[in-house]
Length: 228
Ligand SMILES: N[C@@H](CCC(=O)N[C@@H](CS)C(=O)NCC(=O)O)C(=O)O
Image (cartoon, rainbow, N blue to C red):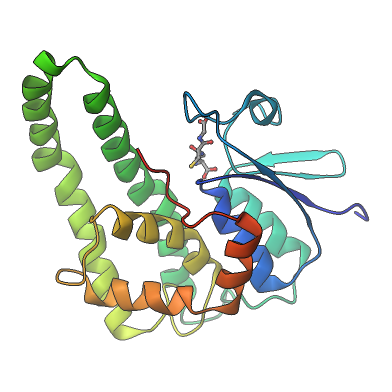
């Protein structure tokens, strides 16, 4: 395909990972940045019309419209087969890479999303209802969300003790995918230096990449996390 790939980047969203990986790969692309709706904080109407899901990220490339972070990142990597961001099938790092590539979106993100939705909905409730709902949310957290998140983060700590990147010995697409989860998690105190020192060191290493500085400049925001 000869047309240029366009990344439709929504501020404070998961599309930051795609922007960051494109900067790392130094591939040509066009960037369109969209602001969230100031009242609802959702994607604006013109963004919602881009794809059937109405969520960020989205890329367009010729006639192709593609949503979903990991599908987009795989598509971009397929278009640049000489890249080194996916360990080869024969590599000893391959299984670890696949695990974190899928666990970031399949296991970690849904738990983080549940926490976000519960926190926002609690803040929007009438004051009188809040203490009861707070108790209910605590129950959900203790029973389901925190134990699962903790197991994932403990595994991340163990794996990062054995090799420096989520995909093993080398920086990989899994690092750019999970970066959103962990950087936002650190901003919301889900990840702390006391409990997760290796994740925090890894975050510092990721943020020291020149591609983080250039992606941040193009994003134009001081954080990838949405405040609420
Ligand atoms: N699994 C999807 C999640 C997409 C998603 O929920 N994106 C959020 C931004 S982080 C969004 O579009 N929010 C705005 C909205 O729903 O209006 C992906 O990785 O692309």
